[in-house]
Image (cartoon, rainbow, N blue to C red; front, top):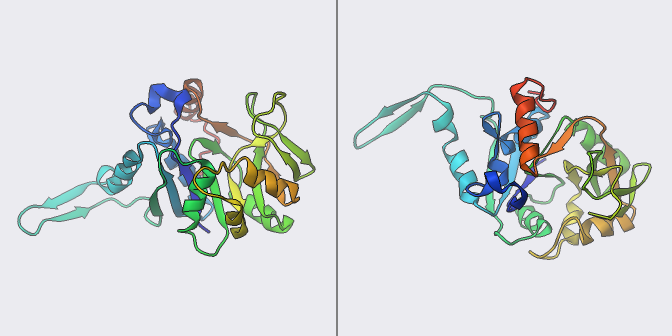
Length: 257
């Protein structure tokens, strides 16, 4: 099963770090937060990624193009037939990474729709490029199929400022991104999407968290995998500091590799 990761947003609330790079490339412990997200999926056996690029997508392209060069000892043979030998293996050798330009102004649903064209006729995993968790991805997938859901998201309980899910057990009866009263469970990403979800996506201006998820909720086919463990997004400089302090202290719950 492939993994779509949305990497195209502007990251305006983290301007200190995103003026010269996209938010998924902001480092946690010396590696982009995107790398940490991908390592989490890879630990559960999901190593085929489709990265939806937008704002400063070339930075992400350069990172993966130079991945071996920057992480290995190398021997160069110069001359008319130059050769490069890499001497160090790494745990990411089985990764497949599709770098997909989805436009700077494309909304989240539009990015997912563009990615779906590279997925084929199959279900897919999807998340955002700025959130970390210790949730068991394999359990989320198993839950999704046991529930016969069209879409399943990982529901988490952070402090404040996010939109609340209207839950009846594990069925999401309503989906409101940012209501006035904020409490309870919110959409933490780390989703499983049935291939039919693409039929709910209507062009580049489509916002995935609005009509697509709302329509799936109205049909009674949106489920919440309730995760009460660790989840943290990196939306502000304070959250950037929190994640890096956790990593530096050796207390990073998401590090399961």
